[in-house]
Length: 242
Ligand code: MN
Image (cartoon, rainbow, N blue to C red):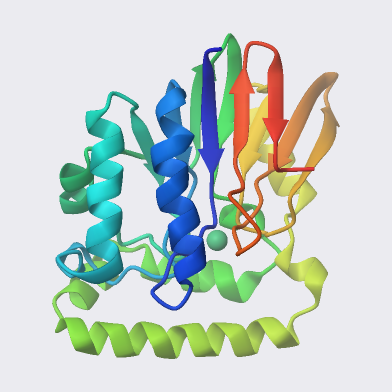
């Protein structure tokens, strides 16, 4: 059956080898059966630049994604808030196609809006300010010009600060804002399906808006318990988002 697969929030890193193995197995066993694979951000726990993909886990991921691309399954990648520095060199090495956030696609006769999800958390003003800074070309070129080890230390420090501030923030602030979802659906003329990740709150939500109906699917984050992917085909969607 013709179908498309969606994953996000794997947070691959050397300290979670079991999750990394689940991903490699998913790429070998499940993904080749699909028409396409969409990775909607936070594939990696962090990414400090495309000059850090020659060794270790990053090199293994490059080889595995490349094998899937070469076998004829196109792979699309949207940046998450952890791996927004993935660039053209990674895209060329893996033969993945980089997607803007948001992107509207037509799949199996349905218009589908794709996002990572962090832009939907509009009530988290501190995070949105941080995001504006780190997504600017000026910040990125200055950061990427620094030595690799310095960048690694800086990102580890940023992760520590982010973990600490998350503990102090009320949960509601870190979830999606309904008015921001509605604004996105209006801009894209009411797509019947919105798929995003980021919040680690997998689920399926119905949004009724201006006389239109939309289903918002939140993809699951990955952990040791198994591969979490969503499948979309002619008959609808199924998978690990309930
Ligand atoms: Mn995220």
